[in-house]
Structures are given as C-alpha cells and as structure tokens.
Image 1 (tube, rainbow, N blue to C red):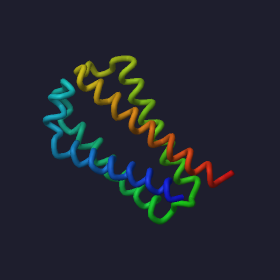
Image 2: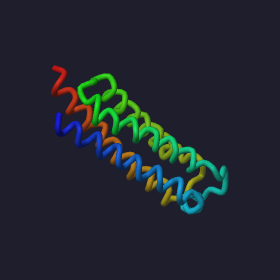
Image 3: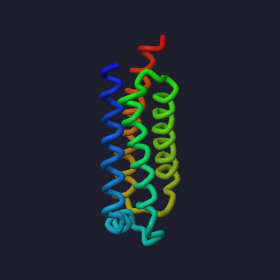
Length: 126
C-alpha cells in the first residue's frame, strides 16, 4: 500500500500545482495555447483540478484501502488522457503546436500515474 499511497500523493500534488498554475497564469496560458477566449477557461479547469487534488489526497490519506475510490481516481485520470488524445488527434480548438505538445506530455504523465495506481490497487485486491 505504500507505493499506492506514493502514486496517489504524486497525482494529488501534480493536480494541485497544475490547478494553481492555471488559475494564476490563465492569461499567459491563453496566449501559449493560441486562444483569446473564453478568458475564464483555465480558471475553471484549474479550480476543478484543485478539487480533484483534495479528493485524491483524502483517498491517499484516509481511504487507501477503498478499491472503488482508487479505481474511480484512476478512471478519471484515464478520461483525462482520452480527452487529451481526442483534442490532439482531431486538432480541436485550433491550438498552438506548443499547446498540443504540452497536452501530450501531461497526458503521458497522467496515463503513467493511472497505470501505476491501478497496478498497485490490483496487487491488494486479488
């Protein structure tokens, strides 16, 4: 369970840091992604990531043995990756090349965390 806790906490910290960054630097991110509107886009995504981060930290700290919650977190991570892949594959929103690259890098990282979380929880539920 120690490794599962480790990966969940990394997920939480990454989500928290990303959420704060998106809120504080939403105007810079709009420029980076070649977007001009809506101006609140990154604020909303950032706030959602902060809430997700707190949920993941709670599960890692108090509900680590709850297979359903760990799988839910991993499922939400996988949805993030799938959404990212759709955005990239169909070049949605006419983003900058740097924007698509950043989405790709984050998707790979989140996919890795989801994989490790699922691998760890399955060790204990067999």
